[in-house]
Length: 55
Image 1: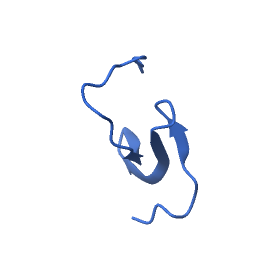
Image 2: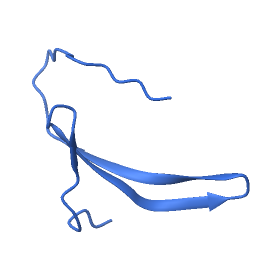
Image 3: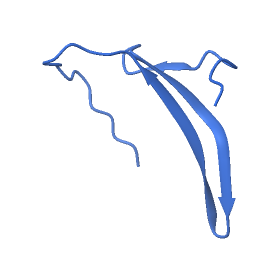
């Protein structure tokens, strides 16, 4: 997959680029999409400052 087509969206305090909706899958009764993430490495131990929750 070519991720050079767009800038991506910065998430996770700027450490990660999200490339959303790169592909869509549709089937009877529903569907889904494919997103890829490019994340910068972190130093361990890593302190988590925020936890997200998605329905």
